[in-house]
Image (tube, rainbow, N blue to C red; front, side, top):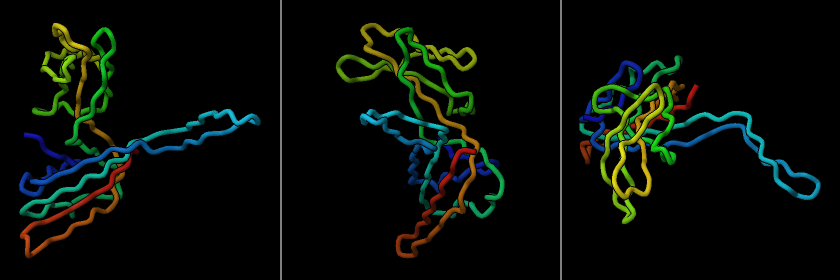
Length: 172
């Protein structure tokens, strides 16, 4: 079963009946202009920011988070990489490998459909199994990111009988 882990804390399933996660690349970047207006892209660094929000019938237990230390965030929303012509893609070394969260592959079919296929991993290189008539391959994984977590927000609705929470985490 898919679970969100924040360091040593597993968010209880009944705290995350509804869960959303977004990813955003942040970093030092700008576009410089030459005398004739030609753009030159300058990028000095980039890191991942993720916003995770959820809700459920019980509190999530976020008071135990130590926001003064970096924490490994075992994400719940998968990311994908389009494989090259050899059906291969290099996965990030920081990815989940626990049960139910291992990488997988799908073949992208010409009609817009997808078909599950096998996935072999050697080190960080993933190779999708060949599927007849496939137009391409998508290899998916769950990120595992070491982050600084902002103090989470939490609320409760007596009328709805539900808890809501949100946290913002930025890669170290």
